Length: 436
Image: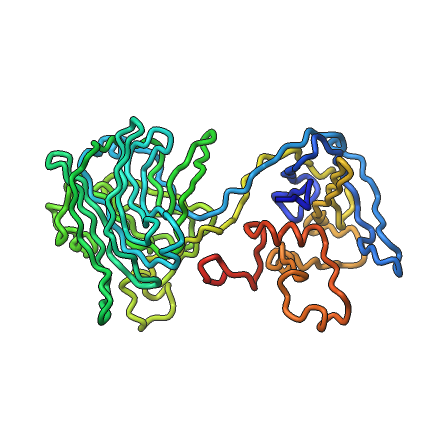
């Protein structure tokens, strides 16, 4: 695929004051090196009928040549639970959750996994290629086994899904129990199969709505992202009966089940944060990645309370998307500490290399309670963020009729059109049809 933006980047802040530091992240595609200069943008409209582009180069320590490198965007939301000894000791287990899938037939999508993709160790509770719930286990030596419920899940319907693994009995059981039943539609299943490989615990984090493909330093790169809502995930250290799985969804949990409970996550706790709370004795708390939607109606929502904060226990679901993106988490190429006395105004890091050019804009604010000009300029940065990466030339209906002219398609608009993971706006929708 062609790249229309051979140099692109972003900053970690949109405005800074003297004494504060701003970092710039840059990615180059086919550009071996580039020159960065900080410029004050006096006039940014290139219309030939006006003054044209006017900028002033500001001398700073970051004005120099840098090596170019390509930095990838890893989209898709998930929850990461750090590695813990109790997870390493899992032999027999039951894994379960309530699930509301939006694209069950899109391909394999992980629901809960602790999986080593290189050695094929651990387990994945997933939706398989046919849209059915399945359990995959691996022996850590390259061999894996998958057992499927065999029936596609209904789209946008709550279902209790889970699987158990019993090494003593050499048995795998997969459960798929829809919360609602419809005439002449049978999606419920309970499948037992002989375990042909012995499951060896995987390494790394436990992941909801994806699996850990690899670790880059301390960062987990995930794959197999799920589209839909997950509520009340549970993990136990023995093979449970179906009735016991149901009991794990109710409070209080019977003492006989508490003893084998490894993790009991409540997504209704600390909703305004990025933390996911485990109510078990092990404290396997997690962190959300790429900002999935929280405070979503759960499997137990009655419809009586439209405000989540009045009944958080009914909003204990998280809606995950395979195209969620919050922070690309690129490495910084250079940082600039705004010098004392730098005039407030609109600035940019101007990047040039290989015949290509890019601007990363930012604002310098006046020090608090110390105005430096007679005129106040209010920059609508909230609107900039809301409409960031919106390629109207490609997406707006009747754009030419509304503007009264032919649409001019810029390189960045073509780039966004061919790389949809980069585009986000108030009018965009996720790949599963849900709005932002």
